Amino acid sequence: MKIIIATRVNQFLIEVGNLETVIEIKRKIEETHGVPVAYQMLTVSGWELVDGLDMEDYPIVTEGTKVDLAIKSGVSHSIYYNKNMQITVKFPAKKTNIEVDQTDTVRSLKEKIHIIANIPIKKMSLFFLGKELNEDFRNLNEYGICEFSEIIVFLKTTNQSKEPSSKKVSFVVQTSSSLLNAATIPVEMRDISTINDLKELLIGRKILPVDDYLFIHRQRIMRDSCSLRWHGVENGDHLYVFKGTASRSG
Image (cartoon, rainbow, N blue to C red; front, side):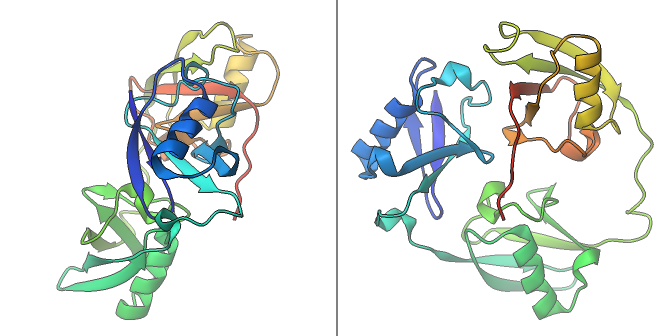
């Protein structure tokens, strides 16, 4: 399968196999892009891939998954220099161009729009290719925003802020090979249920032993206190569960 290796300002495709280890992937990156293995750190949604494990240990890594490549101090290479780019921001009555960095977050983009258009940040909704940029801490390149992309700005109203009534959602929880021999567990819950509620349900039914767990949805680590609706979980989706906890930097 092909995965995307993303640096701060660049990304490239690499072919990997299910039984290929993380260290073997790092060696490929060293051969093709000159980054020494010892200085590489590969992560998916902030979760580091461990050298001794292979791709079968990471079911969240599938065809087209974006794996972030961070470089430890001591290495200088042309693919890591910052790169500015110009995007178009479209308002109801006009368009304007803004220069941003690929590592800018959604929040920093909103701040720039606030400065040039005097729109309160709290009233701003940004959309790219029909999808709302609703996670302020995400980098623009995580949404696929690149040179000349067009961002549409909408103003929130009182009616828009009302959440729809809750509904049931059916999905599948897939455990890793280190848990219950890669079990597949169908689950139905209200979409306002949190990830903590899901953990308690699985532990209460003795499907999972009492422990700390990470849940992954669409290649992103899910937040314990946020609902299934907030994460965009839909009928038929797969959630992957691993032992461990997540900590966010910055």
